[in-house]
Structures are given as structure tokens and as C-alpha cells.
Length: 297
Image (cartoon, rainbow, N blue to C red; front, side, top):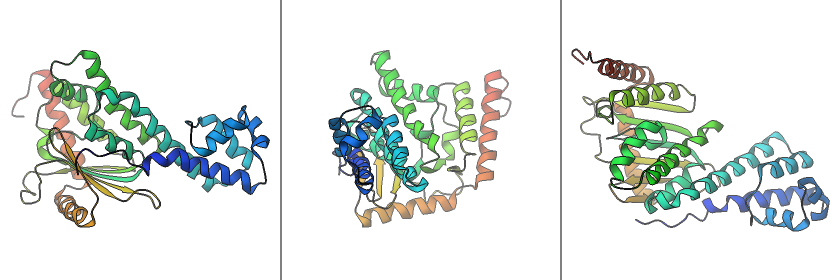
């Protein structure tokens, strides 16, 4: 299943938000003309918002929710839909530097409830620092203009903005070889692993190292990402990336196969405390390399 098309359920977030706002208005016995002043607009503006035909403005949505005096639970639900809509819009500014096979993954990440990912060669894109990303992008886009490289870097860094809302939950399994495969320079590596150490302390992000001496029979040769969604969202799916393409797997039998692989990897992975210890050792190693006193590192 290569060359995925846009996901219709994911693209529906503006419409779902509009449906919610229309239902809230109607339940209160209000007409379009009654709420138009609330968002400083016309009846047609409210109508477009409720039909999901124009990108919702955060201020307008918040003002309507306050006007309707919604419960905290409904407010949170509307906020989630608004966040999904924002995620759906921002990355489209980078379509000129986004491989087709990656577009669907980016559009789905923001609506995921949980992301379970395994990387065998590099730090997962969602968890990379700008300099680490820049080195990888320059290598992949050799000969491309510097501006195109920077746009790809901005795209990858922009994907991390969703972490500000405390979701999705992320479990990232990293092959231990990632800690020793030099990307750029010792300073780039030290900064990258310091970032992993810091972000891994957030309650919704769990970074675990798969030791090289534990998982020879469990380790696949390619990255795997398993996305889970809330009730009412798209079904779970598995994303398997290759050099210049990717597969999106949605059949239960296929998903079960990769779930089994990830479960085996998780069982072989170091626990959170041991993983932090391994990251600290890597940080110390690259710090010594920076100083030119690697010793026996």
C-alpha cells in the first residue's frame, strides 16, 4: 500500500468541529444571526465555520464556547478538534519539500492518542534536535539549495509542537547502535542525547534503549511506527519506512505481526532508569570527544 492518498477521516477535523459548534448553537435555540456578533462576523461567516469550509480561528472558537457555556469536558473536546485542525494546516506550507509517502504520517500524528515507534539507525524524527536533523537532511538532499534544506528542517521540527499539549503519548524504542553512530559531530550528538534525556522525563514520553546484546532475534532492519487513535478516530495503523518509500498497513493481520515485533522489542528494551543511564554515558562520551580527551571511550 504505497503512495497513500490523503486520509478522509483525518481531513474531517474542521467539519467535525463545525458540527459540534452547530449542535451547541441549536441546543440553545440560537440562530446564526444571534451568534454572528460573538465572533465579530456575518451570518455567512458562522455558516462557513459550522460547515467546516474555512479554517477556524482559535479566538472565534473560544468565544463561541464561552458564549455557549459548555462543560469542561466539551471544551476539551473542542480544543482537541481545534488542535487537530491546526496540525492539519501547518505542514501543508511545506509540501514542496515533503516526500509524498511522508505526508500522510505527518497529518495523522497530530490526531494520534499514542505513537509507538522503533528506530534502528537514527533518532526518530519526532525527537530530533535541529542540528541533528540538519545533518541528516543535508545528506539526504545533497546538492539541493540551502533554503530547501532549511525548510525540511523546519518541517521536522514543527512536528514536535504537538507535544506542548501533553499528547500524544509516545513510546520510542532506540536501538543502542543509535547512541554510537556519529551524526555530524560530537557536539551534535551530545546535544541530541541531552534533549532525549530531558524530554524523556515528561510523563507522556517514554524513551527506551534496546541493548545490542539482548535483541538479536527481535530487531527488524527498518523503522516501525504504530499509531493508535481515540474512539471515533481512524483505525490504528502501522507505518514502515524504507529509503525512498513507505508502507501504511491497516489490515488486522498485518498490524498484529508488527505489534508482535514491537512487543518483543519492548520486552528486550532497558527500563526507563537503565535507558537514562545509557543516555548519560553517551553524553559523557561525546563530551570527552568534544574536548579531545576521549581516552578509552
